[in-house]
Image (cartoon, rainbow, N blue to C red; front, side, top):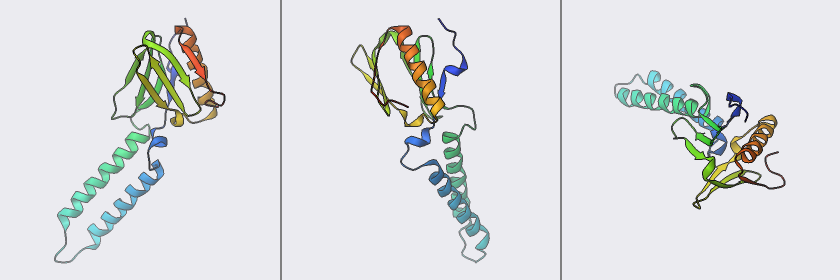
Length: 165
């Protein structure tokens, strides 16, 4: 049995599954930041809304922090798919819980071009979008580790023809 190393972890990019891309989210936050900074220091009139500017500034900085922390590895790796000796572990971001799937409960693993499905003996299906796996070497390593995991635990692996390559 091969030993578990940190290389058994496949890094994911959660921004690739959101409706608005990371760069648009970051751009929106920077536009808000520019607007509030301009409005805060350009408004010198008698009826200025200083309190509202400070609230919007705090909101904007909070939004930018959320976008950066959720999509960039500022606090370490937050999104990954990990192959451990007896489990398949999936974590899809800093603010989301891990999904741990024991190998002995897996009936089959289906690998399609952009989707990984793990079927359990009790009938539950856990789908994982593979659009988060970026880079040719990372996709090849993912496929190799998935094959090794399935063979090691005797889980049926069904691959479609153009899966993850």
